[in-house]
Image (cartoon, rainbow, N blue to C red; front, side, top):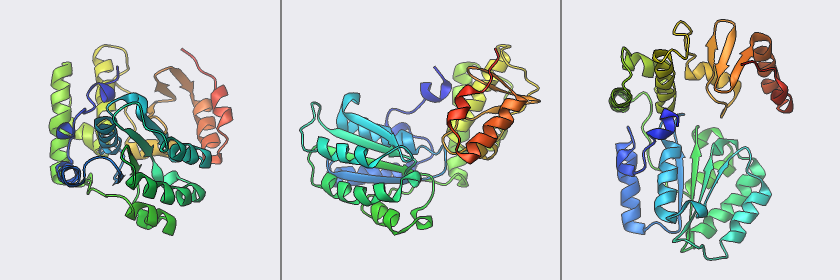
Length: 278
């Protein structure tokens, strides 16, 4: 299991660097209960949005079988209609939760439908819906603003916060100690990852491979901002001299160039035929 999943918090109390947001969430739940709530979580990549969303969903639903998770780019009009259809039926568990990640990528048509969906969730005794987004809705159109304002919006800490950074360093240092990973400048590692918790843990996982002799220690990592050039949601890749290493093999440089060209042009199908060596 990857370190990022192995140490993903399972309780709100364990979420790193988001004390204010967690306090706000608890107050809302204490006053309103869990059913009929819509949440909008905005923050930089790796700040805990999806972790918080999954904890809220699991605490409310009680079982993974009544939790649906989508990404904004893939959520279709038909998906939204299916979400609403399910709301007419009592779930087999204690509740039903819907998570929509990367909501900044939702189409305008889907957002327009979700305006009504959120209002239906608020009237439900068995449903909750949670949106996560990487940008402020002020940067989007009026439909996005209308959707976000229908939801509770806890204030997630920014990666520039010194308190957030301190907690991230302590968290990553603790994991390094548990995993027996030595000779790592944790603060530099976190800074290289743009203070993304997920990015820092991925780099720590790479360091563990180096110590085990599975990776060449002379090959430097790309920062999160550099990796984001491959598009939102792409897995962080590590550039190594003239090759890129990823979990399933090695992509030669010409394949890397092809990957970048095809991704930027939206030619996704061709990515599955890239040459791969072991």
